[in-house]
Length: 224
Ligand SMILES: *Cc1c(COP(=O)(O)O)cnc(C)c1O
Image (cartoon, protein in one colour):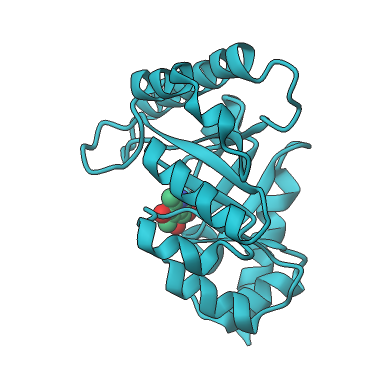
């Protein structure tokens, strides 16, 4: 069972180097329940998936104390599958989606934790609000009336590049935006405290810029 030990080893080697206050989310998309159980047995409890149906299937067959994070692009018609149990949705990219999540939260008598996804990368294909769009949405203020969602912070993906300076600049941008939003809209709310930034290749840089939640997939499950 060499491959299995490898997953536990990777979890441990990453967890051991994380500063206090940084949470590791194991991104288990593409990987079967057995691989997730190997991580679970190594103590991992937070997992991220990017497809609603996969997430639901895994939720059904895996232990109840797993906290599931939705990190992919979320279509409105898929919210219903994850609304009953999802721990945190990282990928809110429009006010309309936030409203829809709120509607499903109401149906299930829950307040669903949400992050606003911010587009900071150079690639055009990545989803998210631009910083300006996000600030405009918050300034508009309608979101304050949504009682079944809770905005917990921001999420981003940096450009897919080897240029560490570029990546650092992008994470600096999100950190600054996070602080601006915190000060303007959540000054007395301790629960606006999540910055989800950093993946297998760039999480150490993200942590330097205040990331509280890193989303690591291939480095855990493919040993990369
Ligand atoms: C797949 C994915 C990750 C994990 O990426 P790795 O490079 O495998 O660590 C993190 N965040 C999001 C949004 C993803 O889709």
